[in-house]
Length: 258
Ligand SMILES: *[C@@H]1O[C@H](CO)[C@@H](O)[C@H](O)[C@H]1NC(C)=O
Ligand SMILES: *[C@@H]1O[C@H](CO)[C@@H](O)[C@H](O)[C@H]1NC(C)=O
Ligand SMILES: *[C@@H]1O[C@H](CO)[C@@H](O)[C@H](O)[C@H]1NC(C)=O
Ligand SMILES: *[C@@H]1O[C@H](CO)[C@@H](O)[C@H](O)[C@H]1NC(C)=O
Ligand SMILES: *[C@@H]1O[C@H](CO)[C@@H](O)[C@H](O)[C@H]1NC(C)=O
Image 1: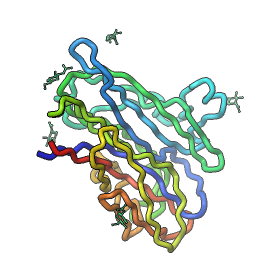
Image 2: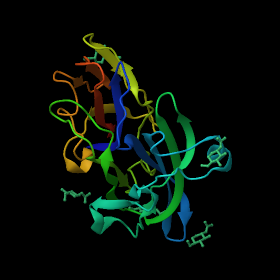
Image 3: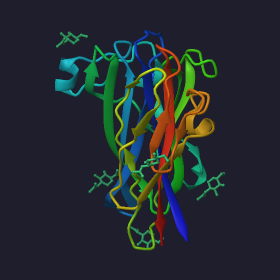
């Protein structure tokens, strides 16, 4: 039997120059690890990492030093939650946690604000469900097929707490991608998405697909035509025009033979 484990992530590509927009989300990722038990429940450590547009979502060195949350201004993210969106009947008592992250980094030059948070939650052994952070103000993309501001997004993760045949719990693979990445116009690039997997299983990639996995910023329309993602996690892309922003929503998953 082969079991597929997956996580979702997205990152941004920019050709040549910056553009300034009113929307605020740049992508991110969600991962988890079973770190112990508490009574009959598992203690699951959920880590959320997100990138936003600076200074629309604000942070400075004072915020980093004090581990303060990012300042979301008029956007609803300060009170939004990581919500169960699928297989919720087997979510094992999961209670939604906030998505508002503590500031960990920012760059005025790159116009990015980065935040991360970690929560330990109690969930029943054997649970299996999908959580997501969904919103509607993704950084403006300006491809013909995906143009527009305030596009909806969905960053999701499968939480699989079914004990494996080897007596352990799955830890999802991680993609450690910085965002945004600059690419030139008209020259094909091969970008390797770095991945790590705590269980040493074989890691694979594919484009995200459908509303649950990427909202309205899905390949292929969020990318120049001809862009591909190989199963070995290499993105092949040629920038179409200067000033374009592209969203790369991918699933990183692994296949465990058991
Ligand atoms: C177990 O969970 C309860 C209820 O959330 C909490 O009060 C307690 O501190 C936890 N115990 C440990 C050892 O984490
Ligand atoms: C950070 O911003 C706050 C107010 O938003 C300000 O009071 C503080 O001086 C700023 N810190 C730095 C290091 O710029
Ligand atoms: C999760 O939900 C999907 C769609 O409803 C269903 O096809 C799948 O069997 C469910 N998986 C589990 C493990 O419950
Ligand atoms: C979780 O359930 C499995 C059976 O599915 C069982 O073997 C395991 O001991 C349980 N773990 C805990 C911590 O309860
Ligand atoms: C991954 O796949 C791409 C496209 O098929 C190929 O160009 C690249 O050499 C492969 N990389 C590795 C490490 O196998």
